[in-house]
Image (tube, rainbow, N blue to C red; front, side, top):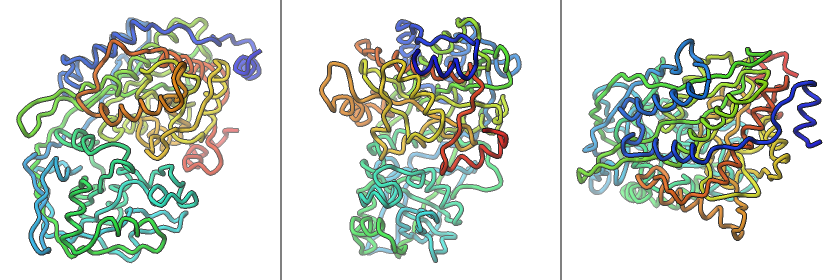
Length: 542
């Protein structure tokens, strides 16, 4: 008896679940990816005709497969958003140096505001270099120590000191922590009271080239309805070249200060420069949607296993030369939606049905900061105390069959144990994240479930490809990031080999089926930052 068979037999005697991954339709996978990434869908931006077409497609597939709507009688969960579009003619002007500087929107910098206001500005805001912009007591690290940034604009580095120094004892070495993410930089600057925050881009530590910044954070941007506290008035990015010019205007060398910022004892450096920028914004209220469908559990329908994948991408953008381009999002993430639909179809045809309910969520606004998943986590259709796990799919394999798979982040919970058990039954090795320096665990929808206490993982591509030389798989992934990720070039290709994708779906199906068919509750590992909240949600959890 294989490990997964034994696990199911021990935990829920008498229940028979499929222990082989059922066949997944390659024709269905191709049709979904090709359709959702077509020009007709316009890049699937929230609040557009592309969203309407996408919602109809996904909910129609759910209905045709026999899944029930999960939000009462509806397959849709409304996600109210503020859509804010900054004037692309904006410039960042810097004074105080030998000569004034102007940084151009898109080429030198990208700036926006999370505040739903028509005009937002920084006027003579003093610029301060705050290293990595991190306050991490557990690491004895505080880049804001002794610094009052109220009314000021902080310039900070992307990633964290462990990456830059290469010191495995500093933070987590080359593995990015959440302190390295741009979202954290914005959040911490807000807590410190800064008026503005600019993250300096560098391809290595960011994990993607400048073109991704320009493509991802220009044009209409969405925010959840603001709470009592705002992020800084202005937040955004500086190119590496722009940062060098900025620091030179202050009589400083950017590369020297960057190196110094990765060492304990670094002190913030006032730049003796002032930032001026006025954002003229078009502000609209829009309602986007998560698509939600469910298979009710046979004996414990109150408990739910969740599968997620985001349907949105970056839409259609107009460049400075007036040309428009569709950001098709074929791999990111029409591939994940194709996988979500196929797993839903297979669960719908499974007999008997699993003990627990299985919920499928096609989320909106992932590209703007995991907003659809964040909204669901704060407005769940099943209580989080009864949510067993989230299994997420974002960017599936189009390169062929592998002998292994990876998961985003480190092995942090019992959800990973369930995945490993299923992988063993399939003869697949499960490896740690092959690109841990990119902080991928914090860049997909499962992270919002984790922050809410629910054990969660996101499957990633393997690296050991059948019939390929060592290193080939990682080269393909890096080429995708360099050439296609968040660019119009992310298009469907008929020559894709989907054997690896089918392996991933088999693994995710078995993992979810095992957890949906038992009474087990995956736990966070000791030391996990999410463990305490989970114990609050489920104090009786073993």
